[in-house]
Amino acid sequence: MAALQTAVKAASAEGLPLQRMVVALTATGEGRMPPVVKAAATMLQSQVSAVVNVPFDPHVRNHGLAEATRLSRRTTEAGAALVAALLASAQRSWGDPLPPAPVPAALPASPTDLRPARPAQPAPEGVLT
Image (cartoon, one colour):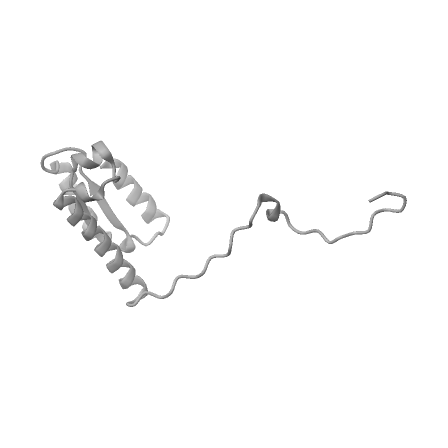
């Protein structure tokens, strides 16, 4: 929890818009959320857009997300709540519907395309090309 609080303080000091942030608190084991985490979540709720609790899911720990159909109902609901919180934060910031995303520039086809093009210069006299 101390690391999260430090990160929030650092983001605030840098002038980042905390009111747009969505924090996901992930449980690392079965059982209730520790009181320290509950207190930190309560403190964060007034500073960020949303705080979403993601419950412990033994399937994720053992198998990852390879078989999403085996996730628990609570994990699926937390994922949906996280997506909804992110969308709501974006809509508060940029409007509803969201504006179209800018089209990024295409990546070069090869590393040689990264070098700036040099104008062709004639070979010095006496040099075979």
